[in-house]
Amino acid sequence: MRILVMGGTWFLGKQIVQQALARGWDVTTFNRGRSGADVPGVQAVRGDRTVADDLSRLASSGPWDAVVDTSSSEMPPRDVLRAVRALRKRARRWVHVSTVSVYQGWPHQPITETSPVLDCPPDADESFGWTGADGSPTAYGFQKAGAERAVQQAFGDSCVLLRPGAILGPEEYVGRLPWWLARTARGGRVLAPAPAERHIQPVDVRDVARFAVDQAAATSAGAYNITHPEGITFQGFLDACFTVTRGPGRPVWAEPGLLSEHAVKQWTELPLWRAHKGVWAVDSTRAAGDGLRCRPLVETIADTWAWLQDDGRPVDHPRWAEHGIDPDKEAKILAALG
Image (cartoon, rainbow, N blue to C red; front, side):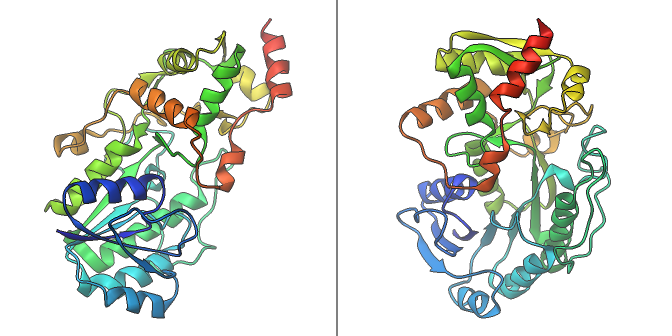
């Protein structure tokens, strides 16, 4: 099996490469060489996927049985379209990592793969789309929907679209789980978003990678929602964080109304918290039926803490700084709770 991984040096892309190599596959990676070291054993091709000459040079390294694209999250649809057109005759199959944000109803409504998707043309530039007053839909969601259409236009029934929600685990670069681990390790009264029994559905990066590699070798097509089938309550999530960090503290639960009064930003200031009813109501039955297996999230939490304690250093990324509430702001809200 020969595969091409677009990206392949950090977090999900790195995991995909490692798992493909472990299966004895021949792996080519394509990236600019700026975000991490190459995994030993790959054939690394350097280049920029927005540059036509670089894509032509990449195409000459094929053919491949499949392409797994993990590196288009910050790219407009037209750049994705350029890449799939350049590689269409050099690959049998395309596995595209997208996002649950492509759905029109997310995060307000329960979601399945048949739910309507935002409308964006496959050749749109970065100016297409808009973000709603309440944070949904997002310009990001429109852009990713257009990217999906670009892949479908080129590969048709030979493409798979993976739509994860939040991906956590060792080497996370976004900073959601690492922030909660650092906060619980510090201890004391920790501001937490009520209700404590709310289920959340993040998935482990290693499980997403395994499913992506499985799909590279499969014959299925279409979209898969990638969320944890069982999930974990927010109480269980924070309990696990306190347990692994041995932080001397406890959560103090604040209702959404109070958090809104204090202008707490959903999704970032208290990572993984969003009050919309559909945010964690994303059905992944299809993926589970086709082989998605998700480890218990307490294992993800423990392994991420172990990575951080072992001098784990994520790839430098601006999203890391977006996550976590300012200690003074947290203290003010905790004081209001008594």
